[in-house]
Image (tube, rainbow, N blue to C red; front, side):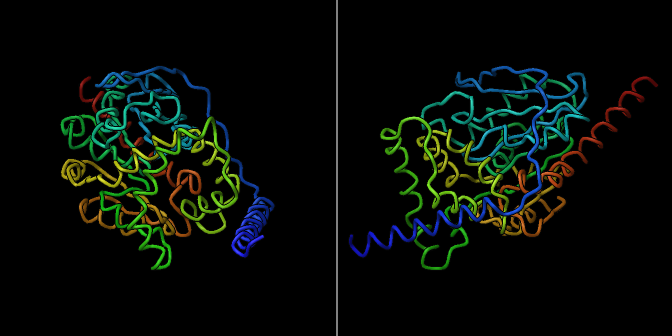
Length: 342
């Protein structure tokens, strides 16, 4: 066996050992299960694609919370927020096109503008009246920015609060993923080409892929804070492994082209909370600071020790930020009813 092969084998063995150690670290937390959906349906978008949508909680609630997920993920990773929020409000969760159980569409339809329009279609179909609280994680937060640019009247008339979790208004091509300078420079220079190659690789990969230990460790490093429980990484990888590689590639290109500045003037007219993990490597705190400068009245929170997947790592803090707007929206609705009765 050559020296290079021996080095690769040794590195693989070390990665396997580190994953085993992570899995044996004491962890007494519970991911929790999603309550049974009150309704499940398909919603058609402006270009004819259909999206999978779930509704939870009281269908007669005057406030609807809409949760939008991130790149390569699905609506099911909002499970802990659904459990907390559906006790007090109606909650709508859906899968972006190409993700989860929604339709896959051509690559040229995989844009943030289209995701903004898709979210508008979901709201029109399942929440055509009442107050809205919108929350987006990562690419989901970017989706909210594009919806705001497209439909400012919706925000003026119905949106009572927006929560932007681990997201960015743009310049994602400049990320170095927290790697040392030489490696970070390589990521900036060649990362897009590497991800675009996934679309070609998809034809050679049938069914679900199984992440080798090196990928497991990379996912934990990029998405979670230090010492994140193995169950969080497993839960994320379970969902990511079902996302077609071509979809991963197409939406990565969309993320690099994303410019959310178009929606910030509209978002500045409604209450906004920005939440980011202090150890986030995919949308680092600097991106949230820039967002906060564009939204000077927004509440800004940094969660120490947490990474990109705040919805899994710090579910209570994400739920609390959203529920605060549910409370104010419910109060607004009660005051409106009282004034109407008077």
